Length: 341
Image 1 (spheres, helix red, strand yellow):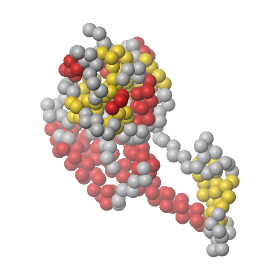
Image 2 (cartoon, one colour):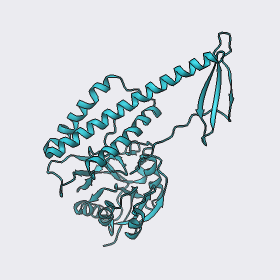
Image 3 (tube, one colour):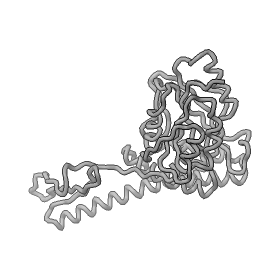
């Protein structure tokens, strides 16, 4: 059978152990496989190239920006995104072939059923939690949002996604330790993202985040059906949700202390406050503000050019989500988890 006119793309970093079955499921199905790698040291690039993928290096800018870059490298208008720990099953591959049986369909977006598989399971539990998200779409209908933590396709106004039959198996965790490390890094990025978007979470979230997140994972996402490992994974998810709120509040406390310290130094400096900023390129910029009672409120810059703020994104060592895998921000509790504020 001829490959379908679809570009499948995957973002990776150190996925040599999980990538081969992902690529095998796509070979012969799609006309192009694009792998965007952010600096693997385990031979991921060679595995991808050996499977016929076009491998492109791109330094890690965050989940959404990395997937937007990958979209731009694709040659076909129909785009399929899977993560490096997600294996398409034959029933979904057949659904894609049926969709293209009479030629390329009209532009649209399709939600895919992505079912999580825990370590030790060969197949997912019959009632396992599944993400139902847009991962197959015509590029005219939308593209990934430009968010460092939320890797979701933002559809054009008026586009209503359809449902594609079949499923993808999401091997969301290598181990408990791997998941904890990944979620710790992801909580750093989410705390920064809250700052970037100007969000301020109320203090009460520190008390309520853990218990409510545990109940969500254990019952709503049905981890209660997965025995001891399900309980452990629900606790992991709840811990991650608490970490992000705690780190958000820590950033606020430290910023408040820094402002108070700057004011004290300004008083000691004859009523002039020095505020340090970071300019593009890493140059230090200082701005002196006249805080004296008779001052006019104006100040001068020194130590560099114009004063502009710069946010630095923390990259993730494994690059992932999500929404689940190390290479994605996505949704599974065992993986990158949790998009909402």
